[in-house]
Image 1 (cartoon, one colour):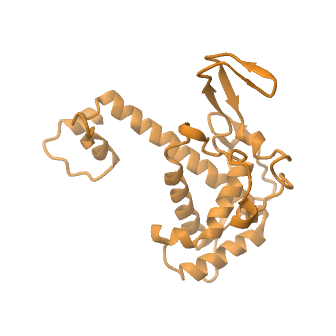
Image 2 (cartoon, one colour; image 1 turned 90 degrees about the vertical axis):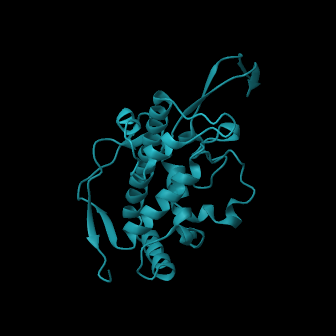
Image 3 (tube, one colour; image 1 turned 30 degrees about the vertical axis):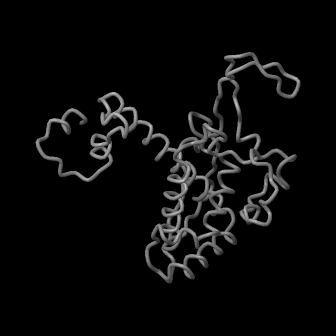
Length: 238
């Protein structure tokens, strides 16, 4: 696809691939070679789609189990959107939507583990970390540690209200990592997830099929094992 797109005389497509092919380094003026373009596309497929879809799966599962929280979301959509489709300009007002997603990613972070390489020897908690060692970190564990979270097993989006989040350790919540290696696409992912959630839940209710069970499967991302069997019901007022 990359070679075919490069060989075209005119570029009529207004899509991501065209944008990547036309991108130029500000200092050198050079574009990316085919391998670099391919790597960027693969990264976006994993980081921009699989992780977001995983976060939405877990969020819909949790909302199906907590209809009171789902009702609060519908109230927010009715008040802010008034029946229209959400726009990016609406996101600052969809505060509870953001809190729901943040709490969902606390319990089920799509990036459930990641590694860092030690640039120098260090000691952490009494353990010696040699230079060059790979250190695994587990947001899935940290996000549910009782030293950082009150009632860590409870789905409570209000814990991300500004007054309750104030004073929390900056690395108690790391769904996108932290420090200089924080995920560069974190705002893109949150924007995407909020818009999708508002689009779906302002029109439909999502419910589990009777007898359906969900088991987390920790692969590259944290996803439901098998399928997430649910039914979709249109709101009467939609």
